[in-house]
Image (cartoon, rainbow, N blue to C red; front, side, top):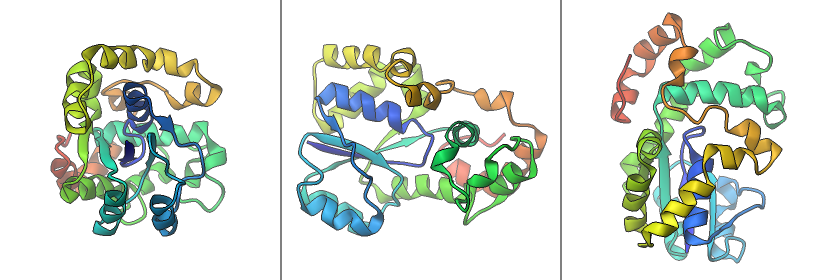
Length: 236
């Protein structure tokens, strides 16, 4: 079995990856993530070995689906309320500045406030900013090949959501899912290593209300209302 989690960033990818790895006894691919140009080699050689899982933020495409078909890869996409996604992304950059060196489009967040001009400009941008992140989620829904997991549903009832997901991948005993949920709780995952401790910041739903003000909401309404509705979320 090979599973690829292909989703927008900060939508629960790490949580889902660890849950499915536990459920199916998969190895989490630890090598360098292949760029779009390297994907053919990745899928057609032994780099992406059987019984493995990894996640990356690829765009959906027929070429990508065809490569996955060569090894019968299962596609999984996580979606999350865009308001929470933006907040999580901002603080992720703050916690891991080394991943966003000077010149990266998110390096403008370094040392900035979520209320500052850099954050607001990113939020308002279509092609190079938050709009592109939302488009990524829309692409995977439209592609029709991916199993969609909504962060909010997984958070509210992980057993129900994972039973639905595993029914589309490969059925497993309920006990297996229950064990995975326990082992991959936010508290347990934070204890695995220092990076995960910082990576898993809140693991909550609706935290955006504690961080976003009217300026943020005005921008989202003006720029992204249609995208948010197409993703299945409400505009505030």
